[in-house]
Every structure is written in structure tokens, then in C-alpha cells.
Image (cartoon, rainbow, N blue to C red; front, side, top):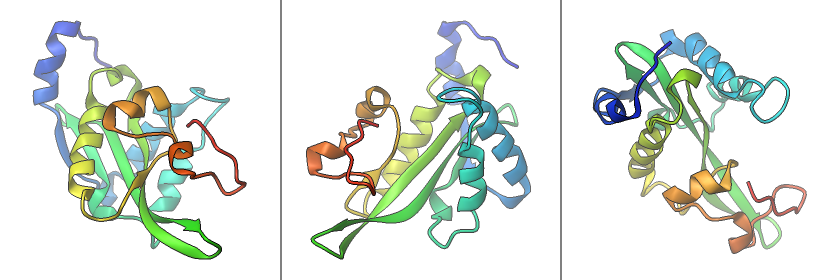
Amino acid sequence: MFLFSLNIIPLIMKQINLNLERPEIFRKMEELVRDAFWDKYSPGCCEHLVVHNLRTSENAIKDLCFIANFNNELVGGIWYAKASIRHNGNAETPVLTMGPIAVRPDMQGMGIGSKLIRHTMQLAENRACAIIIYGNPSYYSQFGFKPGSDFGITDATGTFCPA
């Protein structure tokens, strides 16, 4: 566990290394994701299971799944998958989904998630017409995300969801 004063955060961010996720750390990353989301939005969490299942999915985009390290310790990760938006009956438009994005609880609020998002969004820029995420609107708006309702996009049940 780390404890930092706010004026040291810029120094820490310079030492955050981003690398592609590797099979030998899969289990540790699932534990980090579980810890990052445990009891945050509901009792327990399932985000670590999403990451676990994503790795065996043909929709996973492995060259956009990154981890963050600080002092040789895992401190965060981000995952992407292929998806599509259905419209006009059965027509589909390919998009990317981003998430989950997880940062170890004692390192949250330092910009690690932002660094992962900005880095991978830049790499994903020409791969699809959009990136979709289910998450906190006030956080993700800083990266240019807008509510699906702005584009007429709903979830599978036809509901507009602010997240």
C-alpha cells in the first residue's frame, strides 16, 4: 500500500509504465480488478469475471488491453472488445467497447486510469467509428464521451442509460 501527498502525484505519473497485458499476470490483474470494484457500486462485484471471460472471447482486442505498473507493481488495467450497434432492423455498425478500467484502490485518484484511457484511445482512433463504455458520465465526459441518448443509442432493452 502507498500513501502520497498530492504534490508528488506528477512525479509518480512519470514513473507509470503502460504495457500490454500478458498471460502470466492474468490472475493478479483479476484480483486487482476485484479489489478496485469491490462493494463500489453494489455489494460485491463482477468486473473481474468480465475481464476473465473477455480473455477467451473472439471479440477481445488484445493489443488494446494494457496494464499500468509503478515500481514493478501492478496498479491498473484497461480492456477492449469488438461490439456493434444494431439499427434499422438488423443492420450493424462496428464499434469498440472499453472497460472495465481498474486502478488499485490505494492508487485511485492519481491519474492512472486517465493515462490508460488516453493512451489506448489514441491507439484505437482509426479502428472503429466509436468507442462505447458503460460508466460514470461525469468521469468519462472529460475524455469526450457523451451519453448514448445524444445519438439515439439504447441498451438491448431499448432503455437510455445515463451511464
